[in-house]
Each structure stands twice: as structure tokens, then as C-alpha cells.
Length: 299
Image (cartoon, rainbow, N blue to C red; front, top):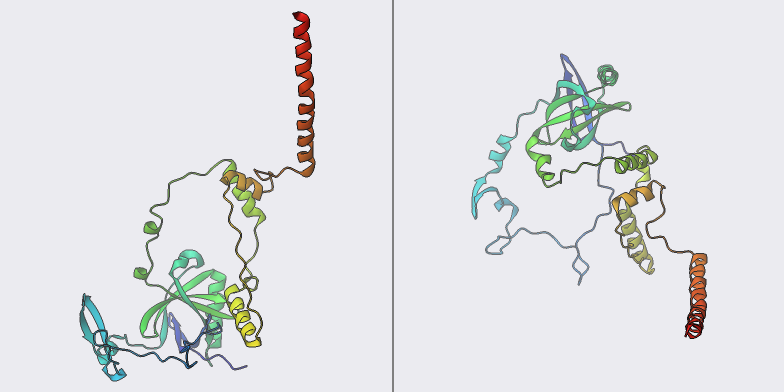
């Protein structure tokens, strides 16, 4: 098996202690099934080409330049050397600025995870930082120039090594107040809240990523295999229509505390109902006959 290639190499520095580390991608989409765009008529791959938005003429790479739109149709042109000059200088060092409790950073700020491992020498200092953070139950906030930008990382102990998650900038995270501003101000209490707590307690478990499969990826893989083998393509089943129900009734049913609101009658109950109807019809003429005889005698 080929050893993973480091995405970045540098140093971690906390206080006056510094040691070399290598940064590796922790999550990747490279194993997903990928498609190519083809010409349906020839079966050949289609090549992407940049064209002028007005003339439609192809634009060669050497004639392409970055531009920032300042208003409709007007741009500020930025030359490659000007963009390069804006990239902050890197000293290849992850400088730890603070140690904070694990739970202090909101998950919405998490961007991409990377594994951090000791690079060649420096294993003792690496273990010292890892074990010290684990014992103190803290994470490290560090900054370094990664991939052309000054990035902030949250570094935490992870198994035998460390995991560093790049953090989104504050301007990149949308306001939760605006996202939830139309939420009605409802107060849930009493039986409904107790039932919800009961259901949550009965569903408690542990996170195991192996239990969650990528159904789309598996379905596409089966589709490709079927076409290669010339088999009939798998047909997609129509999903069952969701049923609408009363919230309290649904909670009771989920907790196993009540039968469905509209339970179907059993065959025995249905037959019993039919027998009662027959008995009623059979007795009705007798009542009318008895009533008529009584009237004649009275007359």
C-alpha cells in the first residue's frame, strides 16, 4: 500500500517549543464514482474551452486574466504577479495562539479536517503536546499560511496523533438569527415533552460511521455494472406516500403507548357488526305487526 503523501510540511510551535509535522488529508471524495462528459454521437470525451462572452471566440490560456466585477460589465483586471504579491508570506509554522475547551468552537465553523503527524524528528515534543492537551481536555487554536491563505486551525488529540480542522472565517458563516427568524415562538411542555424525552431515551446509541452507507454511490455502481454486463437496469421503487397525523397521537404511537388513531376493524368485529344489522332488520317487521294488532283491538 502506497503511503499517503503529505499536503503540507512545517512546524508546530507552542511557547518556545517547536517540532516538525506533516499534514495529511483526513477526508477525501476521490474514491467517489466520477463521470466524464462525452459526445453522444462519437463517444469521444468533450474538452472544456473558454470563449469570449461577447464574440464567442476561443480565448487562449495566455490571454486569460483575473478580473473583479465592480459593476455590471465593468471589471478591475488583476495580473498574475499582482495576485501572487497579495499572498501572505509563509514561515511554514503553525503557531499555537491559545488553548481552549473542546466544546468552545461551534461546529458550524468547521471546514476541512487534516491529520497531523510528527515528521521525522520531534516525536517526543509531539507526544508531549498531544498527551498534555488530552489530559487538560483542551484544543489548540493555531494559525499558519496554508494553501495560499492565512488559515486558523483547531487542533485536537486524535488517536496516536492530532487532527487539525481548518475553520471558516466569521464572514463565511451565515447568521443563525436570520436563518431562524421566522420560527414561531412556541412552548412545548406537559405530555408532549415527556413523550419526546421518552422516545429519545429509547433511541440512544453510539456513532458508528460504518453503519451509514452512501446509497447513491452504491446505486450508481450497480447501474454501471448492469450496463457493462448487459443486464436489465434496476428499477427505482416509488417511495411510500407520507401520512399526515396528529403530533400528540404520533408521539404516543412512537412511544408504544397507544394504538393507531384510525385502526382498521378486525374480521371478527366486522362480522359481529353485520350480524347485529341482520338481527335489527329481522325484528323490525314484528314490531310493526304487533303495533297494528294493538291498534285494531283498541278500536
